[in-house]
Length: 480
Ligand code: ADP
Ligand code: ZN
Ligand code: MG
Image (cartoon, rainbow, N blue to C red; front, top):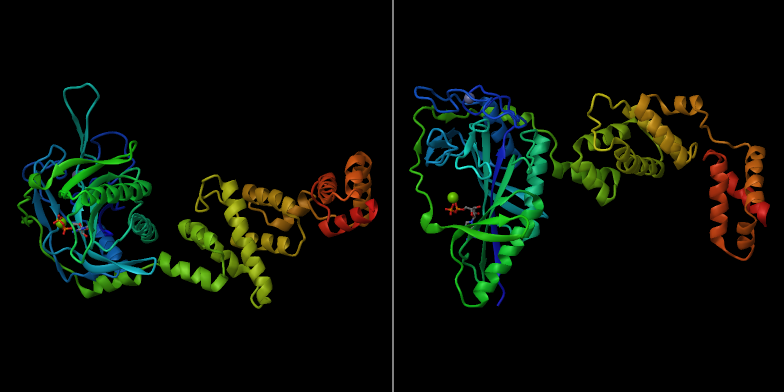
């Protein structure tokens, strides 16, 4: 008998807004000082009233549109009541009855994963438990930060699919600029629900919390599939419960059973008006929608024939991808297709390996990134024509990064132009031959490596500037 996993995700994402969800406190995820971004509203002082953050609303709608959801014409906020010391009001303002977005989907590997809903709520504060102390501390900076929750149907069938879904969603958040969704900072939190079944009816599900990386999503799901399968094969039952994830031991462990589940006594939030989302508002948000990763991916493949690994890198590093396309648009129109293809390929390679290496993690969006797409295109043109070797190209690129100057200028200024003068190259070759009698003997004894070695030495002798074709020709004729 084989068991089919069914996996559904519940994903919380902190939205990138200037202020909090219901007050004007700063929404600053980097704030290190506790309890500075707080006010009477987000600390629940008596007599205060919430006001809806329009920007947060727009960002959820934007996400809903990107994920093919229906945007509700009528929506509302509801109170979710429970007691916990990081929740000053004793309830969280959330949405149960009429969430902002419903019935969407996201395609993962050609399969439509249905999205049940996306709703808007507020985050809680944070508790800190100093080691050895008999008290806990609470930080309300996070209390009231706009939080979006997305719930999928149990359509995912493997750990890899669950991970791919979370990663693609993360990328979409980034493209939409709705959240930085940094999982390490808790800006994106994934809970997975898993069950196994052998027939058409879904089995009993288990929920895993505290998965704070894509890797732990994948490992957590795999662990749980194995654990449940063992139970079922032994004729035992899976009990419905919430399990935690132990990041070091890489195991799930029981946290609370279904019987202990909360009754949240939801009811419509009386302090906020119901929302009527006009078509004109939704259409306006739709009109601002950027090109999304899936569309761009398909376009990069179709229009430029870039190899798969590089496509993913240009998609993942959105700024780099956009810069890449600006460079391509600088190549002269009406080039022979093969030549254009060569230029495109070189541009992708130089951006991804060389430039990314030189940037050392800083972004091309930084103010001190000085290379214009025009100059980068010229640089690629010089390489493609063979005007500079790959060795000189590295030096030129480094200079371009430092000064922003155009490559021809740098080549002239620094004396990096290619040496095509045969006499000059001949001289370098003779010096290398004189110094390496052993290599010449090896070559004569049929060792091809020796030729490569000598070419390398002679190239170094000209500081990488010799025209490689001329250099090779001269060496060959000199040592025969
Ligand atoms: P609950 O009422 O326990 O919160 P929901 O029906 O609201 O359960 O679903 C919560 C999440 O669990 C959703 O992501 C959903 O896709 C997933 N889910 C529901 N039932 C199952 C199941 N049998 N197996 C796997 N995932 C499930
Ligand atoms: Zn506040
Ligand atoms: Mg539920």
